[in-house]
Image (cartoon, rainbow, N blue to C red):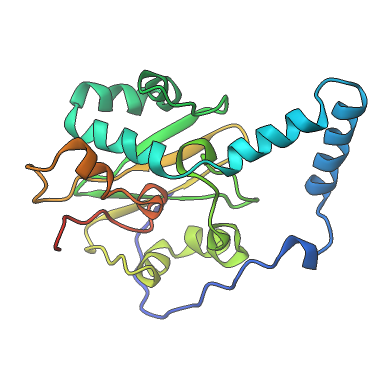
Length: 213
């Protein structure tokens, strides 16, 4: 979906409340029930489930940043990443999980931003846990209606002729942004390029910046 309007007013992003402060949602209750059944039936042990959750919680944006940096210096890899993120991740020895992930490329004419309007679906295996603001009702609703205004609140002001495309992640398909390589980085190594790629760049609310800019 595209956004063609400009807005100058600002809205604060409310802090996501702690789960303990709110009743369980239908899906949270279902998750606990299914987990309990899997343990009760002997499909997995409680220790195996804990270890898997710890592994997911330990993920960081470093894996995604590594993929972005490689795509910036290797056009063939970029083409494969845009075709199939999960397979491209395997090439670098990274585990992107079993849920399909689609990379959307920022260019001089198009800027992509990711949201999950229903909950907080997100490519955790590549860019770590979602921030609280990503899960907030304000971000989930306003990004679809007025993405340019939301981006401005993150300090990302785009020219009027840049089209903003909002991608809604689901349980069956996740998105990550392939940011545009910043100007003035031709002499940087792959490792140095990785350091420019932040979590917010891969969500689409920020832009990578060349050193000193």
